[in-house]
Image (cartoon, rainbow, N blue to C red; front, side, top):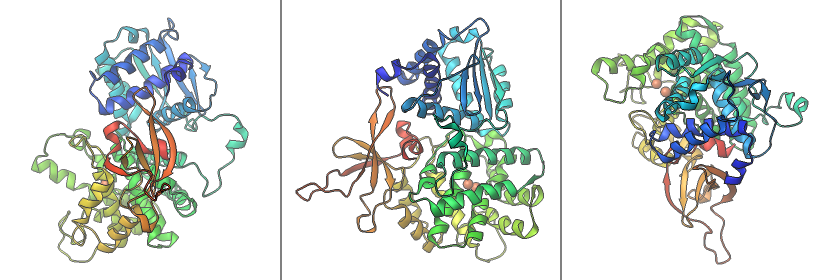
Length: 487
Ligand SMILES: [Fe+2]
Ligand SMILES: [Fe+2]
C-alpha cells in the first residue's frame, strides 16, 4: 500500500492493518528484523489514540470489526481487503475478540512478537482460543486476553448492498475464500470433537465437500485450486487437509470421476490426517530429527485416521465404508513399500492413489518447522517425477502434472524485466512454459499489491515474447500468500 494510503486510514484501520502485517511478518522473520520492527512501531502508534483507561477492545461481530464497541465504517479497496483477510485469520481460529490492557503500551518488542507468534500458533490447536488465553497467561502477557467467536459471526466484512449479498451465491459463483474458510472452520470443529473422543456426524463434512465439488465442476477459472496455494505455517494440519481435498477433487475432475466418487474423495482428503489429532503438538512440530519411537508414533497416524473414522464419525454404513480405506492407504505408496507395512499385495484404491499425489505435493510445497524454505511448485513436481511408478501411480501423476503445467498455479516467477509475478492460470497445451501471471507490485510497506494479469505467451511486434521467465521461487520466501492475490 502506498504510504499516503496508510496515512489516510483511521486509527482503527491502522491498528488492524498493523496486527495483520505483524502476524504475517513473524511467520517469516525473526523479531529483530526491520520489517517486524516497523510493524511494532505502527502497532503502538495506532493504539495510542484508541487506548482508554479500560483498555482497547477489538471485537468481531456479524462480519464487522468493532473497536471499543464502535463499528468500523466500511471502506472499499485495499483497506477492505486487508480487513477481510484479518477477519478471516481470526475467525478460522475461533477468536471473537481481543481485549488489550494499557500494559501493552509499555510492553517490550519481544513480548509483542511473542503475542503475534502465539496468535498464529493458535490456528494449529483444536481448542484454539482457550489454548491461546492460557498461553498468554503462562507467558506473562497479562495485557491481552481473548474471547471465543460467537456463532454466526464468521461471515467476512462486506461493503454496501448487505441485504442483497445475504442471498446464497449460486453454485459455480460462490466466493472461493468463503468456501475455503467455511471448510477449514468446520474441519477444525470436527477435529476438536474427535480429539476428545466425541462422536460427530459426517453430514456436515459431506455438505462441505458437495459445495467444493460443485465449484470444481462449475467455476470457469480454477479458483478453488488457487485457494489451495494457502500455506499456513502455523495452521499446517488443517490447511493441508483442505488443500489435499481440493487438489484431489481437481485430479478427480481430470479423470472424469462420477460425482459420488468425487464426494468420497473430498471427504477422504479432509480426514486423511485425522489420526494426527491424537498426537502431541510438540511431536508434529519438532524441528530436530525424530527418534525411532517418535517416528513409529507418527507413522501410526494413517491407521489412526481410519480408526477414528470408524469409531467416531457417524454415517450410514455404505458411506462410511467408502471413506475408511483411502486415509489408511495414503502413505502406503503405489508399490506398497511405504507404511504401515502390510502382509498382502492388494493394490491400493483409486482414491488412495489420488490422495498420495495430492498429499505429497502439498506437503513438499509447504514450509515446515524443520524446513522453513518450502520447495517451489515446479521443483516439487520435478522431484515427484522420480517416484513415478514406485511412490505414485504413473498415469495419475502424469494427469496431475499436465493439469498444473510446468509452472503450477501459485508459483512465484521472476521475469526478465525485473518484475515478479504469480502464476494465475495454466497455459494452453502448446505453450506449457508460458502461463498467465498476476504481476505483483511493492506497496512500500514491505508487502505487495496485485497488478495486471498478463499472458506470458503474449508477443511483441517483432515476434519476441514480451516477458520471459528467468527464475522461480516459493512465495513464502517473500512472505507472499498466493491465494490473496489470485482469488
Ligand atoms: Fe499423512
Ligand atoms: Fe497429509
